[in-house]
Image (cartoon, rainbow, N blue to C red; front, side, top):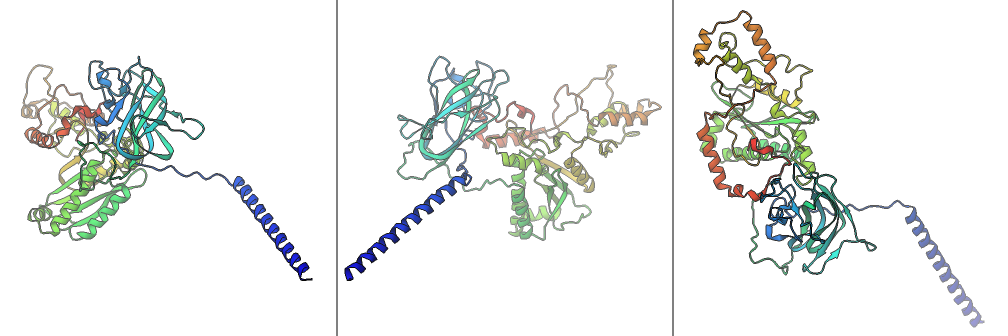
Length: 529
């Protein structure tokens, strides 16, 4: 009897275990079917900053290549946005170009330590004549520069698509980071000649056992050169205002095309008030949104004046108590945001240069100089045409005028405040100072008689329709600038020369011509710095 009961209990346990296994099996099958029905979830690839080919943080001896077309197109010229010459005899080529007689081609970067590589940016040759760029390539990695592994997905090697033109940078991101010390780009197909510029994205790993070159110098920088986007800029200005409420005031000139306020910081002993006899200065930056240095300099100036005033610096207190200072760090906030989001690696000189409407604010103001000079040449000054405060042409600010919203806001701001001095900070690559803009060209009178300005003003026979001619001249010249025939010395020429020498002598890398520039065309020869 007992034996039979024991057998029944065992049978029940076995049946229960079988049932549980069946239930578990059905549950797993249902979960598998559910996963198949569920849409795939893609994880965004890890993002790392550039190693520094473009910025030259990666040194020349860290870059190697399989060959080069000639000495002017070595691997050191294969840096992203490197600018070069089409002159075959020039040693500054616009890319790394391989020897066409070789069969195996590669471009190698030594990170000098284990690095998580996350992507590559490639670009064609900088040239006005040749259309040379890589259209497809493989990527390989190594820890000893001898044994190389091609990037693959377990089934086949990954072939990346490259450029379709010579200027536009193309980003190729890896699905997962690859840890290695060396990375190679292996071009497979190309347009024209095999020429390439590149940047490598990666996060260096800290490993005390990692080998470093004995000659490597690791720079230490205790300053935070973080760029401030629109939100950060506004927050920083607010913080400064809270720290120095008695000498600062935040206001705005108006709004940009995308409805961003153009903020200004006033620094004065009585902010918000114009005191008789107290001069008003304005310092502006960011006419071109992609010129970021001016913005940061003015933000630093705000911080400096606030801190030094609170600390009792006598010179700063004398400046703040005696001058009403207006600082506008970003006159073109829409364009800055565009350039900031794009990044220097994927951008070019044109990204963020213009306003959202397509205006270059720097060239968007009325040309009143030509109006005055034309009137002087005709002897209309000062009887018909004033020699100061020349009015803006009526049609310039009309609703149909080709004027940016930002330009209108700046003009309105300048008309509301009696500024006696103004400076606009712009950035370029090859000039340190901008001593003059639109200096008057020297001209010889057609009749060959040299008249003094005073003689022209008081002895020139006035025509009957002078005022009508003045109006027509003003209308004709507000957007026109006569071509200069020769350069003239600026009234402040010696000061600008001193500034240029002082700056260049303390920034000696400006003389390193191999660094190259960042524009497709060399627009920087006439730009400000």
